[in-house]
Image 1 (cartoon, helix red, strand yellow):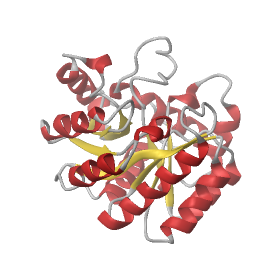
Image 2: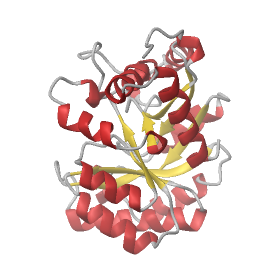
Image 3: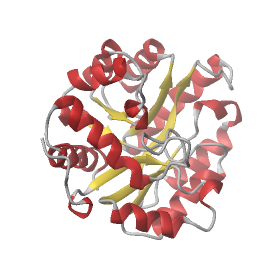
Length: 266
């Protein structure tokens, strides 16, 4: 297994990053250039974290570069702030040519920043929006796998595809998502010392259903923990998958990139 690969030859995609956020104020161009130099050829800029403005910011940033694409939605933390006006605005944003998915959306029962019944209602609305627009879904799920699967099964009815971003669950949950036609995305968490159970999931899952992501500015991988994350660091996620599965880094890069391109049609 050869991990000593020229960065520029990798062609990775960071499938989930929030580089439109305030943490990168006046730095987006430099962050994008560092990503290119690290072998990241495309970045998916994800809306919906914090407030509605993150969606417009994601679309505007994606429109500024041929290497960037955007998603629009609302994080389950902020489901309580989603009403009919917000849903109309998001549906309009899905018409933009650089918007390639609905999300992030989902369920987060770890923090419960929005009431669970509200999270479920809004998640179902976004599942329906994905079905109406024909776009895939970017799902955030934490401590709510069984209910997320049930909602995807009942509301999606096989009409939608998507990705479970920043997956942290067990193998059973991963298989349930795969059976629904979803892909699984791994973040810098798989590099953490205490993440052996998650690396075991990586070991078992098929590479042709995996994405890599940073979730920037969060979840900075080893060896950069303690610093702000950015798309250039997605290589460390890919390298960890390569080590765990005992396959070449080039294969991980090529396969995960193809997976993202196939789902998002980019």
